[in-house]
Image (cartoon, rainbow, N blue to C red):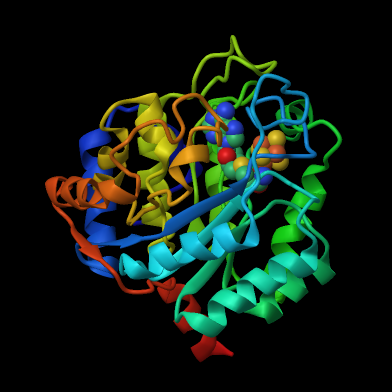
Length: 337
Ligand code: SAH
Ligand code: SF4
């Protein structure tokens, strides 16, 4: 299906949701069948040196109780993910300099030497050498959302950081042969529908292996506390459009969908998403990974609740898959090279 910018704009109005969502699901079934890939996520620190205006982990938030997991705890969580049968571990944190680059490389290689499992990192902006070190230690994939393609709202929301430098990170990661993921937050203060149209086209040009998107959810302990949440329907349309334009990308239905609307994550699966990421962060600190309100608060996706995740996937009309689930785009790239 060819989509012009004006088609995209028209779909984003919501006038043709039934047609859009059916087409997205058709494309997802052609590539992934009814399989839903699982990724076990470990959020090993909620310290962050950045000060993003939207995020509860921002360094200026004095109300949050901070935590860090020890190396042993991280390895234990990784073991739990492997035992559950899940074939990908995702590490996500604030940008926390406490863990040296080498320490993180050691964790990656320790896991890779013991378990046959894919490792995805979402540890923010780092240097070429750091990304290289982690890739050589065995990391397979890296997620770093651009957050917005409106440079003005980006600059407002992420003081002290630079949009172009974040984009450069994605280029470096690709050069280092990671599977690369990016995306935006839908409804970041300052963004318009035009910015969403631009994001759809720019992200598509990047030929991403993974696309991560979710609605902005206002956090009371941040400067964006009284801003409006991102629109869930708009996010569903974005999922569907991105699936149609990026048939082979792995695309999670994110937990922000569930926070913004009960049942939102299940709906995301029905309009193009093909990945669910249950959190394996230990129970005692899980709720402190409070990027946005409600994050990790639901109990149905914790370790014991894996069955509940499976039930949700079945209820949505799909089937849980425990395979590693690399992006099929990677295989095609290998053939071309
Ligand atoms: N520190 C890393 C990874 C952790 S944040 C980074 O910033 O890249 C992971 C993602 O959470 C961010 O990319 C952002 O899109 C999302 N996020 C942060 N605050 C949010 C909020 N208030 N509502 C919705 N998503 C949010
Ligand atoms: Fe830190 Fe990421 Fe939150 Fe920004 S979005 S404050 S970099 S954890």
